[in-house]
Amino acid sequence: MSAVHLHMGSIARLELDNPAKLNAFTPEMLAALEAHCATLDADSSVLGVLLTAAPAKAFCAGADILAWGGLSPADFARHWVRDGHRVFDRLARLSKPTIAVLHGHAFGGGLELTAACDIRVMAPEASLALPETSVGIVPGWSGTQRLLRLLPEPVLKEMALFGRWLDAERALALGFVADVADDPLAAAEAIAARLVQTSPRATEVAKYLIHAAADEDRAAVTEALAGGMIAASADKAEGVAAFTEKRKPDFPGT
Image (tube, rainbow, N blue to C red):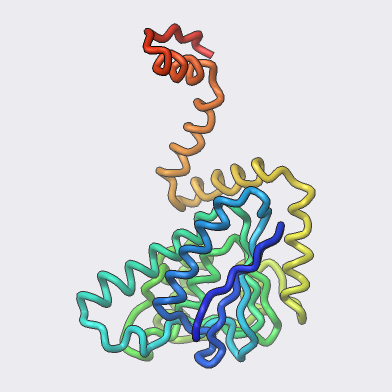
């Protein structure tokens, strides 16, 4: 049965497990990924997350066509596309740094999934593609949106309009992947190991700041950073104390 497994640890692992379908996404996998993201965000012992996939020719072949091919237009738009967007946004906005480990091809939704991670490590033989137009649809899980912030527009058009594949060498040259390695998992683990030398809180806030600059959830990031600043103030402490003690507050202004 298709699944997304969560392996906890200081460097946690999210593993796609649908090798019979080249790790293609099913509704159950989307739901599991969303639930696991909530678990990861709530665990302060987790410093970072690796996104991997069960051994198969592809890291992720996209979305299982049997899961969406028979949907009505309304259900396809309202549920399949919007649910996928919500789940991938949840991954993108995870408070922990994330690394996608591409041991094989990432097509369609698989490529969009890697774009939701902070950085990517890729095997030399792996390729990236947006083949949606070849089956009569368009990218639906941020392939025309988030990917445009990570790839040059002409390159994205090559892929989405003309079906051109992007190989590992060119992906590295374009900055889409952080490293190309024969053992991408080992390379990703070496990068993630550096997180033990950094402040988890500072790393989290740095990620938020970069996302705000890139217009990734800017409104929520701005209010979260402001909330964190004001929550440390004496005014906040006085406001809470006054409310609890049923008196007027005397704000010190600090």
